[in-house]
Amino acid sequence: PGLGGALGAGLDRIAARGGEPVGASEGESVIVARAYDGGGRRVASMELRGSEPYGLTARILAWAAAACAAGDLTAGAHGPVGAFGAPALERGCAQAGLRRVEGDA
Image 1: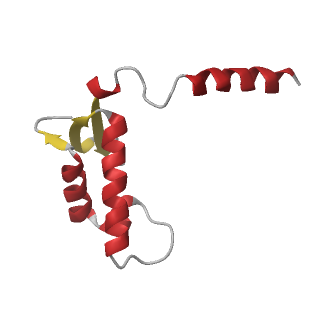
Image 2: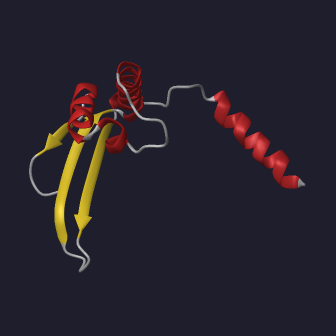
């Protein structure tokens, strides 16, 4: 019984902060992906960097929405690579501001 009131009060405080986190325009996105084989050895890795995460997410979602509206996607649930294909997804992420960092991730 007491949890609902405490949870509601906490959510009210969070909602009162506003939509833009403090310092959002100053942040940076860092994405690290690593693939391992069955023996636990790393076989591939990649690091991507981009602008602050809120704007980057908005630009990627806008690209994906435009690609969906323009393309002939099949019905059903898809992951990003299945929906757009790896080359198109890479181009879309680059358009959104993600860049590949050379070197070992």
